[in-house]
Length: 481
Image (cartoon, one colour):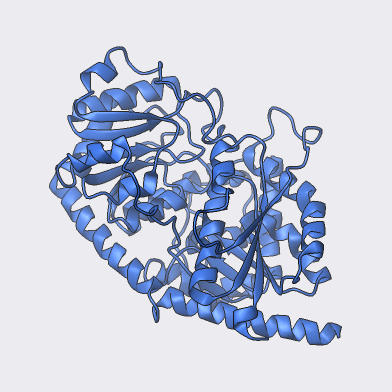
């Protein structure tokens, strides 16, 4: 089998945060490595932004995108079912549709890559004689925690968040109890059992792809590859192939927002956005508005209606809703800041904004997609983690990479006051600490570019992955013949 004829199917679980890295991976494999790519997307019924991304792109079609109809899971969940559990149930119920779609594909895929929540698709890959790899669109540190969690489950009694000492992961930076991922917050919930299952199933695949690169996380990657304790858990090759992020859209008519940015001084605007699923309480929105105003900095703020429950409540509905001006901001805020700031409801062109020379800071929820977009744009951050693995990411950004500042107390535990917000914004935009962070993140930007270039570590890891996938596919086909 010639690698140019290799046909890879990539399975994406529901949610824009999962779809984006899968689309970017597929496009990179197709454009740079001449691989035939079919992307299977388990869709949702509520995300306008997701439906927009599934439309065929203009110009040359790099990948085939096949939506898998969303299964009806209303009888399996209730109002208290959390996001991770819903995701896992949706994927599980969609698997018959995934199987029938793969069975009808001509030519049949040689390889299956599933994202983090699609590990239950292993039997489908086995049935069709395909090697299967897992794609973790996050960090090596998160991957290590996920694969080691089943061992932590046996070692530690009681809730992780109640532990006094950090959770030790062999060869890696320890995890503070308050930084554990959402599924580990309560060991009595179904999402914890789902997370344990995923951690166990990681070792069933033929390899693990991660959206990181060698120079960003050398210690965690070394642990996954060579540490005896952790290596015995993973038992599979790991391929850091990042940073993969959305490309800048081809030049066209400039939006009013970009035209406004063109008129601002270099590094003078802070961009505020909490990703495709992040929401804040009404009180926190008010304090953030006051903090931005007090900082006297130029800003672009993507605002969503206040959260009624959890900070991830809009995960499945991101990008939908009214485009009207928000009416939940402090009285007079829009009038007082109309010369220095823009308020954008719900959604805006994040990659183009972060890449604009006028943008000098990013107040972010620390989702890994947004984090990579900030790093590869050379923009320092204010880390404001909300859910999922974002607390891990925030700790890595502030303590290890030193390219971000963060509130003294987690925003999920208490409202961050306007004075602290003002101080963080000024730190990034005005003070010496901000300049140091900006210098560091711009060095990381160069490191990221080098990793992706031909001959770079991530490029070579992708080549190694394709060689391995081709050999495994050949072996499985010869066995079945």
